[in-house]
Image 1 (cartoon, protein in one colour):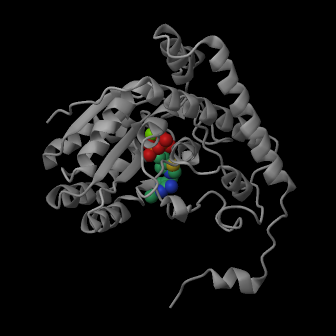
Image 2 (cartoon, rainbow, N blue to C red):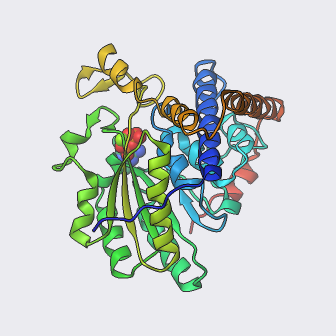
Image 3 (tube, rainbow, N blue to C red):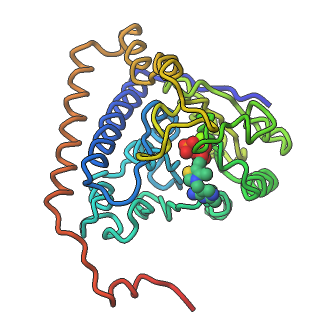
Length: 332
Ligand SMILES: Cc1ncc(C[n+]2csc(CCOP(=O)(O)OP(=O)(O)O)c2C)c(N)n1
Ligand SMILES: [Mg+2]
């Protein structure tokens, strides 16, 4: 079943472009800070693959559920949904002002924006999404669930169970797959029998679309259509955004595909389709923004990042007592 896409207004295009620029500045700062030894835990660089998350989340409502993809730790998704990333950075810097008081490293929650329990377990979000979707349907207020996952997580049985239940019960869930063709060192073609992950949706008769994940505007047109279906009680949609991972899986892990190092040639080819470059060309060509306005958006994004770093650096290190740590443990 194909999906009728929604066309974008100029205002929507500017909102998408601005979020893409912000996410790009954040991602580069995170890479630098990890190399400087200023972060706790891992960083999974987002460069090359930031556009899908922005397209999926810029037009969500605050009361919609979101489970962001782990790449770039979902920063693009979250800033698009209105999360103040100072608390995310403080969390990742081990500070008491962090969103979970630095108890989570990057497995955070932002309950006010309905972002819960970002987990280290790939595919964790499928079962809770069904629950959130069921609750949203019962409330009847048009809330949707944006479930963002990589190609790697669609090998999990729970992905298939969730799609089955969502379709059976017509739940307002968007299965948003960010397919960068890799899961650490395994290529998607090694792990999946079909070239398109979206073909899984056929088995459940779920409407599906495959989009160019490097083009933030094209992805947003499709994401909006999927969100619209969910809001209007028309059930789940599968969206596959074909994208790239320009850098290694996480900082410190060799940049391999299978046993083979990814070559300079491969990198050069991929980088021709940098989402920021493509979006910049488009807004200029369509007369949506002039170069001066684009430069200003970059300056604002750079300033936002500096302020977030200052906030994180100036905050107190989290040193919870044993009693405080135990108070956050739920066990029977
Ligand atoms: C259940 C589980 N198995 C394995 C891992 C280790 N792991 C972390 S990220 C990752 C790859 C995920 O690939 P994908 O979902 O395509 O996202 P990408 O990293 O490519 O953006 C794996 C296998 C994990 N975290 N959880
Ligand atoms: Mg992947």
